[in-house]
Length: 265
Length: 251
Ligand SMILES: Nc1ncnc2c1ncn2[C@@H]1O[C@H](COP(=O)(O)OP(=O)(O)OP(=O)(O)O)[C@@H](O)[C@H]1O
Ligand SMILES: [Mg+2]
Image 1 (cartoon, rainbow over the protein chains, first blue to last red):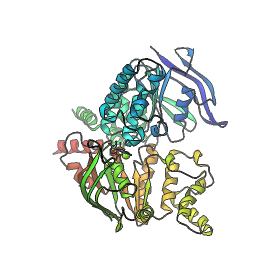
Image 2 (cartoon, each protein chain N blue to C red):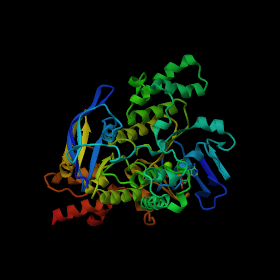
Image 3 (cartoon, rainbow over the protein chains, first blue to last red):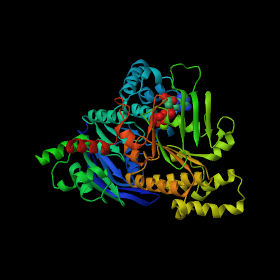
Image 4 (cartoon, chains in turn brown, green):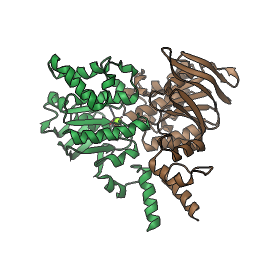
């Protein structure tokens, strides 16, 4: 079981121009690790660098104190799944990585169907469909299934919430919480709200710099200053009088309401 | 005006179990921001493609600005601009300028008039400094502005955005809504925005909720707030839910 992925003085470049860095941080197993930042701040480049697809980097990446070998150790779910589908059916798309590894097709199919169902698609109905004849959210679910059939030590997801409906987003939270128990999970997102309760920390990329925040620190900064990171306004307004607290309630109506009631008592 | 009159549609007429729209009727007025919402696979993008004349009904009739979408494809493509979920699939030029020019060429605008038109629209969208930039150097938010510019330059009467906010960072999302308000006020356009992001709902003037191909709710955000909806059909914004809890407490 992997314990942590350690980035040391990692710098990312694009055509010799620095995109971001130096990044120093540890992504651990147990809870998921979030990466946030504006468009163009280098989030996707960071994932690609860890995956070994982007080589203009300086510094080091290690997994449990060994130089990290991406090959065979990572799964990466890309931002725009439809650009990468290349199999004629959903079934083949989902099972592609498994079939590459060999093993029996029947057992692979069973695993593939199980994951499709878990991500919320009726396997019976979708297995033989063409991946491009699906709705946006359905494509996302196929891509997520293809990413989770094989679970290597490091799982990376680039904006997996985009296009998922609320039910799908809740599934994502549930599934990732479970996977994070014995895998290192990195997730790039513009919608951290739902994910904060299952995350250990946030790497915030901004102005070529990378700062790592523990969750409550991140929320505290966002609540006390609207320039820090735009969390929902209603949440920040409700919590601003209490920005000294150690543990912030989750970003949903019920949790905040309960929190405020306790404060009044 | 957009008019759906008992419209039926299926992607594959032989498959009985797959997605279908059955005799759905509604209309949308111009000069409003219409929100189309609903879960994955509920039909939102299909409705967008039907309005844009990219798909045609199997039965019934769709009219946009008085034109029948089944009869007058070419006209409809001019009247309805659609901005897809993923801007990368839509940008055809290698530079910003070129991408905007592409639409104008389709309209057969004289080459001499193009630079001025391009400059104008770029200024309106705030991307005039980017005109010479290669498109692959743009950020996600900038790409989206370019797509909008390239569509707007053709002076469509309707603009349809398919999930414009889901790929934007939270800063760009706020800018997007400001930009849309300005568009609505300054141009004679009808706007349809498809969205999965519940925080978007309060920016709509009018909301239509789809489920399994059917239109199941039409009304304002205020009406949606208090509507009695079946469980799991829609997730209301946490902000609204929070306000409700506070109101119940104060009552
Ligand atoms: N080109 C196609 N051929 C066949 N079926 C399709 C095609 N495109 C979409 N569908 C099916 O039609 C249904 C409605 O799809 P549509 O894309 O309209 O949904 P949507 O509401 O936009 O969903 P999402 O939120 O996931 O984008 C889905 O079940 C989908 O599988
Ligand atoms: Mg869609």
